[in-house]
Length: 609
Image 1 (cartoon, one colour):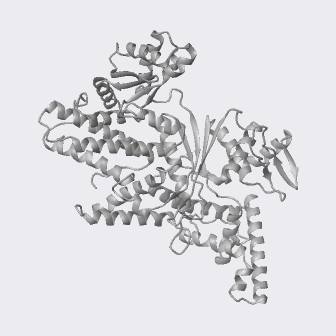
Image 2 (cartoon, helix red, strand yellow):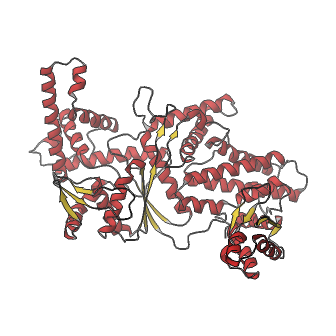
Image 3 (tube, one colour):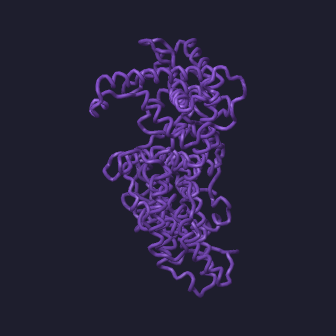
């Protein structure tokens, strides 16, 4: 279906051209004065300069033509040259009926569907997801779902941190804990065990322990009163362990079979846990690739950069200049190989791009990460284009997000100052919602717990997504779980309220078939219709701008318009059956649009609250 604004503009174009003016002046916008009109056209002002006439004279001419049609109930020319418009009730009702009859609710599919890789998640294996992983997961998931709703081929990749020194640290800590394992027996020639020699809980303890071992801090030991003799021993042990970890990393990257077997165990155990925890957020990925997958491409890509004369040595490292004459600030070169010969994140990301080009031939890339990584992605994108790894006009977008802060305005922490695990955050918000539901207990404890999981997820995701991605925001659990205001639970409660009305209507012996929506009988009903009609436009705009918060705002506005209509209208007690059927059809359409929007954001509504 065409967007309603596009249909209005077509009518305006006909009127402008009929009056002898170019159709480029026929632009329609939503009115910012709904007390005066619903839509507005300001084209007469621009046309006045081109045709050297008074704006109000042009506006009056156009309005006369518009009044010959049947789209508007009001067309007024207002000084100095605005054209104020209100849709005719029958036209708005017809649009509602067309939306209701369309399984896509009027949402247009992209004429030329694109293949778009969305890189989000970015978790590290062997580490639990924590609150710092929340924003990437929920923003990336919503962007991916928006694109799919519009008909694009969206490929979501978690892009795991699964390579580098952390692997060597884990291997050597495992050696210290379980030296009897066959991976550490140089004379072992059999098959390595199929089952991992650790659980996820053990693995999540191994890495931080190993990391701490390799980074002994003498100053902390001195504060604790440790003698200089003991400090010297601890420093030596730390350096020795760090060197072992470096050697283990090197051997793994060279393909040493025992360490490769351990690496596979780490990956299998970590992926299973990550899939479970991302699943609790209703987030899933098409690809579970990691930095390791890019390694095979790195030697050739570095040689390619050298052969093209793009890479050169600087202070022992290999770098590529990315600065352009149009840059407003100085941008440093991209380091693609360190002085010790090691590759970096940039090299890994470039290798990943080469792999994605080979496997998927994408039309565009979207990367979602902390906004502090903007320089990194600017460097990667520019090198990829300079080197010809992607087309010069390839769309490569970085969506950088802000920080989730506590009420003190600082990055969100646990009460003891640690980084909170994501599963604990989810459990806390579910418990808070459960307690809120039990305050007004109308359901069993079991149903309350299940409902709390659904509402808690909506509270968490909506609380995040309703903020502009690039901005920091305050995580306020009391505000997020409130059933009032611009919150997830308020919007879910609106959907549940509509479901309740529809159920009661059916329990009274009525059917939801053949519901024809009639012209609005009140201003509140007309406002609800016009808000529903924005669905197509809002979703398309939100995806184009990668702005989930615009969908959140639309959901909130639509919920408010429904609730105003609901409070003004006695739907179930209406005696005129055709009028009642019309209202039932309208609120069912509102529910379907709200459901479609929350699905794009990655949560759903319960049956009861």
